[in-house]
Amino acid sequence: MDDFLEEFFPAVYRQKKHAHENNYCKYDNQGLAAFTSSLYIAGLVASLIASPITRKYGRRASIIGGGISFLIGSALNASAVNLAMLILGRVMLGIGIGFGNQAIPLYLSEMAPTHLRGGMNMMFQVATTFGIFTANMVNYGTQKIKPWGWRLSLGLAAIPALLMTIGGIFLPETPNSLIERGSNERGRKLLEKIRGTSEVDAEFQDMVEASELANSIKDPFRNILKRRYRPELVMAIVMPTSQILTGINSILFYAPVLFQSMGFGGDASLYSSALTGGVLACSTFISIATVDKLGRRVLLISGGIQMITCQIIVAIILGVKFGDNQELSKSYSILVVVVVCLFVVAFGWSWGPLGWTVPSEIFPLEIRSAGQSITVAVNLLFTFIIAQAFLALLCAFKFGIFLFFAGWISLMTIFVFLFLPETKGIPIEEMAFMWKKHWFWKLILPENTL
Image 1 (cartoon, one colour):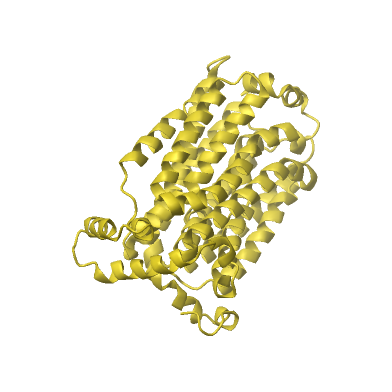
Image 2: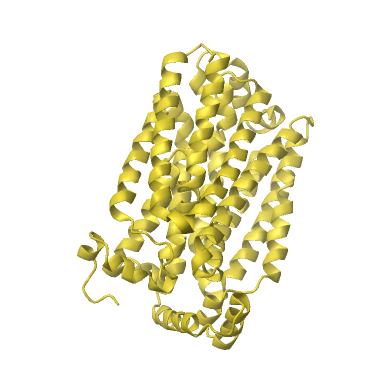
């Protein structure tokens, strides 16, 4: 929004007004990138702090803590009078993200019955994409309100923050967490309640054994480095890294910027980013329907192939038809938006939700909290790197940026094909046996890891 840029980023505002010279470099400003990215660095640090809190005080404590940080952040942002205040607000929001992303996927994985775990876990991604879409709609609605529309837009973040805080107070703790903290009786009662039956002996026993092992381990972060957890550690790093290196964040973040650079007008670029947001939210439902039937691998590999194809098509159109000063013709612009939407659909039913689902379901309890923290931290680290570098990369690589991401997607699709075993239908507490049967991991794992 121009009012927002004028107040906090006058240099970008001036650049935007005069930027007819180079389409790809309009928004290349480190201050603006730092504002965007402060969120991720704060989230990264917070997710590591959240790990011991989630473990010691329960998943619920982290969810409520995250909600409170969100409230503070949205208040600071809505009332910001200078850049420092704005960035401090972003940092508080980042802390909320760190806590939320650390605790919520764990909460979902632990509460869900095994045969529905994939679908339940993906509701996290659905909610995320629905949030992105809603935010796009809010921005679209508030941009017409001069000069304080941006304050309303940033302040409305308090609504989901309130929901999260109050909702967190009424949620039950997970049975796994209660047992891990010594309340076996309460854990058992809750397990019977959420499974709707008193025949939960086997699952309860699994949890008790897992929590005894978990409590014997004082330092889960040091422990996860051991050789017996090598496959889990590799996945905790590779899955979130790959999820970001699909280029999805840059396409969603900068969709308005991207489409504006391609010569769609200001309003049109918000339309098109609302469109991509809506497409992403809807496509996640495809994977909810199929993940526990077709399995994780099929979705990841087919989604990867579709994304590579789309990136290459966009790169070719932009390379041939879109130079320094020309704008895309109407038909080509529409084609680019269609192909970007196809890319987003493929992401929405593959790497989007599964980048969170797979890591959250493979960790044994004794390293679960640490493993989930590593997943979130790596995700935010790469989001930070790409957010910080994307505008400069776009400026340097031009249309090649799409080929850059296509190259990464090719690598990760091959990685999944070779190294990720299928996890559908395997109870969380029995994942260890799955690695033992895998052609590669069984060579890596020490003999006696049972």
